[in-house]
Length: 255
Image 1 (cartoon, rainbow, N blue to C red):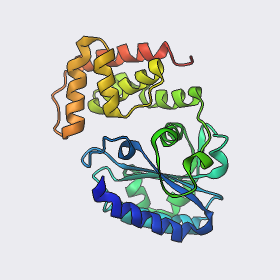
Image 2: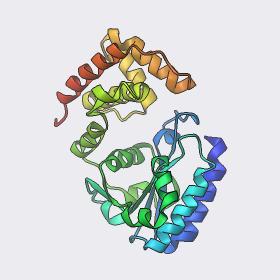
Image 3: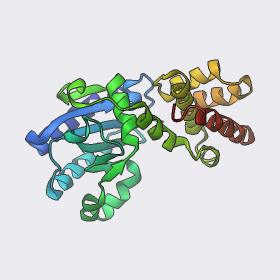
C-alpha cells in the first residue's frame, strides 16, 4: 500500500481544494486498513464526509479529479462515496449518499458527465458495512477523528448490509468464486462470533470453523486472493458450499 501513499496525499489535497470548508473528513477503509491489500485484486476504498451536498458544478470538478486519480490507482481503481455528516451520527440506514464512483461507472461518466452528476445519488446499503469497518479499523486521512464523525452501526443494520452482499451467492459463486467463498466465510464469522474480518481473515476463520469438506475450496480462494493466480475450482462443490453457508447465516440473521 506504501506505493499509493502519494496518490492518497494528492487526493486529499485536491479534495480540500475543491470541497473547501464543507469537507469534514476523508476516511480510508477496506483491505488497505485490514492488512490484506493486493494491488492486483484490491481497490482503494474511501468515504468523504461533507457538511452540505455539493452543487453539480462542484460534483463535476470533484469527479474530474477522481477519474484522473483513478488512472494512478491499482487495477480495481478507486471506490469512493460522498456522504453528509448528518447521516453519520446517528447513523442512517439505508444510508443516503451525494456522489459515488467506482470503475464500474467510469464509462457512464466519460460518456455523459452531466447526467452522471445529476443521477449518481440515492441510498446505498453497502455504506453500513463500510462505516462499520471505519469505526473498527479505519484511518483518517484528513479532518475530524472517526469517533467524532461516525455513530455506531447497529448489529441489525450491519447484518442486513452484509447479507445483501451475499444473498444471491448460489448464483454468483459460479462467476466470482474467490470473492463469494471468502465473503460467505466472513459473514458467517460475524453471525456466529461478532467478528469483523477482511476477506483474507474470513477465509482463515472458515478453515478453523467450517466443515472440513470445504477447506480445499477456501484454501483455493485464499491462494487466488493472496497470489492473484486463478484457481481451478470445483464449481459443484462451490455451489454446495454457498447453499450450506447461506443456511448457516440465516440462523443468525436477526439475532
